[in-house]
Structures are given as structure tokens and as C-alpha cells.
Length: 233
Ligand SMILES: Cc1cc2nc3c(=O)[nH]c(=O)nc-3n(C[C@H](O)[C@H](O)[C@H](O)COP(=O)(O)O)c2cc1C
Image (cartoon, rainbow, N blue to C red; front, side, top):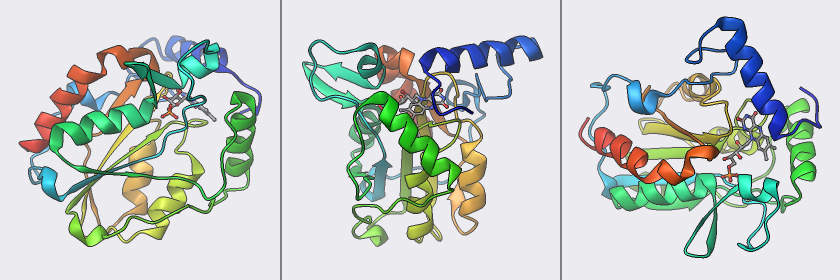
């Protein structure tokens, strides 16, 4: 992985991967690993109770200005009624709204660069160092929640490193955990397995949700379908 790749290289890597296996539903990078539309219902998870659920998400919209966005800024945002959301932030809002759940934004103690290349450089440096970037805050009153739904963008084919800090710094013992991602082409990119390994005392659902940033205009019905399924598990 080079620190300078761009949106185009995510696409070309996916294309190479798809071509090399001859399938679009299975690839080196998890392209098409969509458990949202195709996963069997997971019957070993209890139905999600929105009043005891927290949606925790990490999201870095690269601008707050809805006008005159660059391509990179457009890629990293979803604009509704003139308001700019990060892709993951928007999906978190839809999930929480549908369930009547609380929200918590996972933020780093340090302010992240909004410039796209600077953000990639930071992400790559953290990944190379296997860093645990400090977080601004912990979830207050975690004991109030039975279920935590954790959302993040795929960064460099993995969770952003602040998510490792997040999972290590909270005690999720006995909680029901769901994950969701937004991405360009990488799907869950093996992160569900990593979260499951990191939280041996939690019940991590195999029914994860992922959506490409290119499909954000279809996010509402897709989120609704997934949320209604986990709410009736
Ligand atoms: C530093 C960085 C690395 C990224 N790496 C990947 C990647 O490996 N695969 C992918 O499909 N998308 C990748 N993306 C695209 C993001 O996953 C995608 O734009 C996501 O929706 C951003 O979510 P946000 O707006 O909530 O921050 C990357 C974006 C950034 C900024």
C-alpha cells in the first residue's frame, strides 16, 4: 500500500481483484461482501431494543461547505438539505433515527486534517506504526446500553486506527455488537473478523452492514431494511 494512492487506485485494485478471481462477489479486498442484502437472518442475537442501543461512529467529512466541493470532498460527504454529513455520520443518523437509539461520535483528541492527501498520509502513518491515536472522549454511561452499533469508514483496507483505540478502551463484555462500514469499494474489508477477535467477551453479530459512498443516495431504504431485520432478530 503506497501512501499516495487515490480514489482511482481503490477502483483499479478492485478491478484487478475481481478480474483475478473472475467473480465480483468474492475478492481479495472484500468487494461485494455485502451481508446487508444477502446474509441469512442471525437467530442467535436478541432483537435490538432501540432504547438500550447506542450508535457509535467515526466519520471525517472533508469539508463543511456544501458549495463548490472538490471531487475528494464530494466523495467524503453526503449533503441533505444543504447540510453536509460524513458518509458514515449520515448512515449512523439513519440507523439511530430508525431505532430511536442514542448516538456517540468517536473523535480523536487531535484535530484531523481535512485535506484529502494529508488525511491519507496521517492514516498510513498510523497504520504503519500500529498506532493507537488518543480519543477525545469515552462513551459516557456505557452501562445504559445492551447493544452498541459501531460504524466507521474503511481506511487503507482496514478500520481507521482510532477504532482500535476505541475497541481497546471500552469494556464491551456482555454487549451485543453490530458493525457497519462506508467505503469506496472495499466492503467490510475483513474488519468484522477483526472486531470479533478483539471482543471475545461480547456477542458480535455476523450480520454487518456496508454501503459504498457511491450508493449514498440509496442509503435510506437499505438502512431501513437492515435495521428492521436486526430489530426483529
Ligand atoms: C484515509 C482514507 C483511506 C481510505 N481507504 C479506503 C480503502 O482502503 N477502501 C475503500 O473502499 N475506500 C477507502 N476510503 C474511502 C472511504 O472509506 C469512504 O470515502 C468513506 O465513505 C468515508 O467515510 P466518512 O465520510 O464517514 O469519513 C478511504 C478514505 C480515506 C480518507
